[in-house]
Amino acid sequence: MKTLFPPKRILVAVDLSKPSLTALEAAKQAARPFGARLELVYVEPPAGEPVGLPSSLDSAAVSTLRRRLRSQRGRWRQTLARLTADCPAGCVRMRWVRGWPAEALPRLAGLRTADLIVTGTHGYTGADRVLFGSIAETIARHARVPVLSVHEDARLDLKAPMLVPHGLRPYADDSMLYGLELSQATGAPITALYVARRDEWEIDASAALGRRLESVFGARAARRVRVLVRRGDPRQEMLREAEEGRYGLVLLSQHLRPFSLDWLLGSTAERLLRRCPVPVLAVPVGAPVILS
Image (cartoon, rainbow, N blue to C red; front, side, top):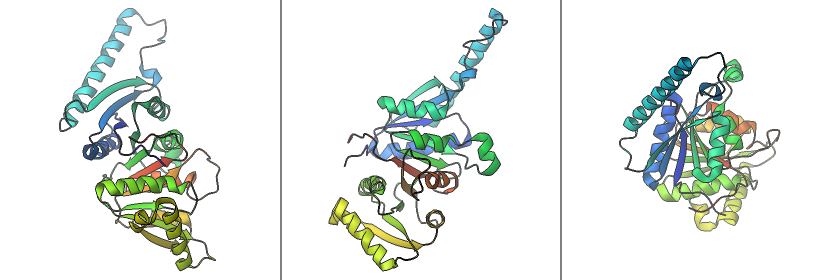
């Protein structure tokens, strides 16, 4: 199995909102240890571009709109230049594109301009989520590269312990692979979480997960993983463990089957993206990847 790790090109959308600035800081933290390049993107809704304007607008009005847009872009670039002044020279690129973030970022990454997407999230729930939607969830669901989602009040610590839920299914091996690679590079401890069924003995579940890790990744890699077994509702136990404050990152597998009943996929990933107090790295299952 191969991964896009370590990341060499990191794509992050920055509109200067609090979540996007948190995402920018996380992207910088992810880039520094590996010498990765940052691609900062402002994704402007199509209506914001002076394209297809009503014919009733005179040339003076059109010119005013264009000057305003150029000024807005200039302020954005100046602000980001200040915020990335501590990055190595030549490692930051800024782009201004038209579209919707949930569509534009996966598309840009799909063009091989990045092998990791970093996005901020408000963590909206209930009516707020219906009104505003969740860009982070949509990006993670459709991107073919890993997506790191960071809550606006969180920070990324690559040396802190990592939590990798594993349901003894093949797709969970994808996120575990990234976890092992990251652990080896940063020295961060890694914990595999399995939520046992009611009819399972915890000691049997722990042994089964240990055998799975050893058979897929080898005995040496398996010994680096702490196996943790919990009992209860998988979604609740996963979130409860993440909220304990012991971890700096949660890794899980993501895919394109929104109606799956499997506990590691679909709504589980989206719930963690909204509510998890620590950054979440969603790894696409079966994505075409290249070892950097």
